[in-house]
Length: 381
Image (cartoon, rainbow, N blue to C red; front, side):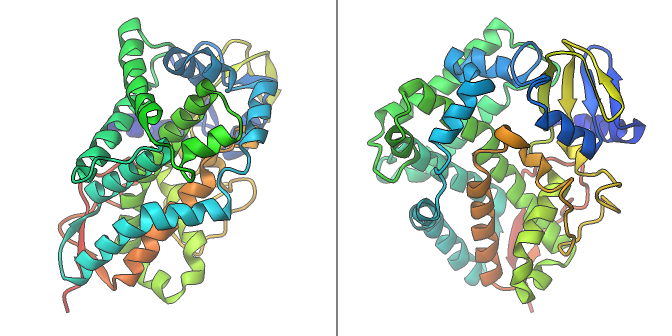
């Protein structure tokens, strides 16, 4: 999904209509209200079956992960891990994972250095993955370990393709090997008491269930943050709203929500029609593949007036609030962790003083999904 041409096509679909059928690909949903209705209807729209995300999970993570995607078993597992991200646990994340890296970031900016936030966030993501896997990197090789973990996560995500209803055997083998590498790290880890692995095991999840949850977090949680954060910073700096946020820190949550609405780092989700149904005047036929374009739902002008305008004072109505994180029982498991991580990074940058981007930023191009580089420094007087 990182190719700019794909995002141009997504933008074109948004302009065509609320629901658009594309031969060979499926039914694209662009309207926020229809999207919410599809995501909430778990009886008629399934996450399992041909063309759905469940196929990828089954091929790569095994049958148990596939069962985790829908129905009573999914609900039962969600209940067992519902309190994973308690305030106490987030304090552990802040102290053990975020504080050391962000302290170094502030020190470098205070010293007048130019910092590229993209590799910095990648390292932070790798550090978070280490924590979740319960693995302590070898002394003196921490950064290399974090880079390697981030690379494995990127490789796993790259296996997902919009045009593929099922991975080819060779593709599935490669993705499975990558997943096994990540899980092998968890199996070798010391699993300290405050790690994600230890918390999942304390909830009496078996090995397959632990790995299914970790895989989900890596695919749509940790890696999403690494894509979103540099773009959020660029949006705030390019639109001169970072200074406004420093003056009015109470706008932080609105700023995060608005930036994620504009960026939508996980731009789509897949469903399969279990039985024919009519929703909001649109007919969906049994067996059809439905591509809910979160990116377009977040640009629905009926819900978000002037949708391409970035405004940290914008209040999101219930119809559109957090829709890019999902709806109902499939609402993003790592929502609170992602919000917490983004907030801590932004607060660290605000403490570093007035910043500027070194070189050109394309933040206003909302079709650009990710950055390869974003160099910032304290503003020169």
